[in-house]
Amino acid sequence: MTAISLKNLDIFYGEAHITHDVNLEIADGESFALVGESGSGKSTVLKAIAGLAPEWTGEINVFGKPRSHGIDRAFSRQCQMVFQDPYGSLHPRKTVDATLGEALTIHGIGDRSARIEEVMSSVGLDRKFRFRFPHQLSGGQRQRVAIARALMLKPKVLLLDEPTSALDVSVQAEILNLLKRLRQEQNLTFLMVTHNLPVVSFLCDRLAVMRQGRIVEVADVADLKRGDLKDPYSRELMHISAAHAN
Ligand SMILES: Nc1ncnc2c1ncn2[C@@H]1O[C@H](COP(=O)(O)OP(=O)(O)OP(=O)(O)O)[C@@H](O)[C@H]1O
Image (tube, rainbow, N blue to C red; front, side):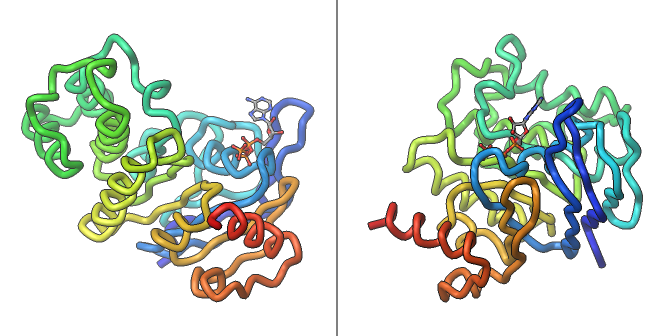
């Protein structure tokens, strides 16, 4: 079954035309990466799916249901976003408990306490952190809270915008392992933006390369691992990544 389907997606910020004719089909349970140069529109695609970039034309479907242009509660139960910078994305004056409980209140879901503790445990956060504020947590713990917040409503799809790039290298691996485990345990579909091709190899099944608002290539991660991307720009990205690794 198709989890995310984007058809002829053009996204705008006012006069600025950011993406052009983006078409993607992502299967249920698949982990899919968007890579490409800075400013190519990768995060904007995630934002449009999440409802944070409402000016678009084309179609956005998640599990066969089309997304409307405004706030769409039924849609947000299925599909949640995790941002790059956990410090910026968490409210500084809200405890972990308040942050995780918010979506339950909005959606009228009961069993608050049990659900918060269950999700904290699933992301590897000890319950002693439940009434702490973001500044009382490490970067990795904050990103676990951000991931927990995204999981509160039991979504099927996570939109991950550079989920590890704001973290120390040692912590990045922990969060990547966590995401890998959560995907298996909860049969999640990932659509992830990253600059980091080794992260794509570790966590993803396929990737799309974006340039100047367009998809220039869709490939299997096996092709990336073999150095077998076809488009000249994709190949340039691979070479830059390999040069940084050495
Ligand atoms: N809120 C906004 N209003 C106007 N323009 C924006 C807004 N957000 C992003 N843009 C512009 O949209 C374009 C695409 O930005 P986007 O963040 O999607 O790129 P990206 O590929 O994710 O880049 P990066 O890898 O640097 O995060 C850029 O030219 C950016 O300046």
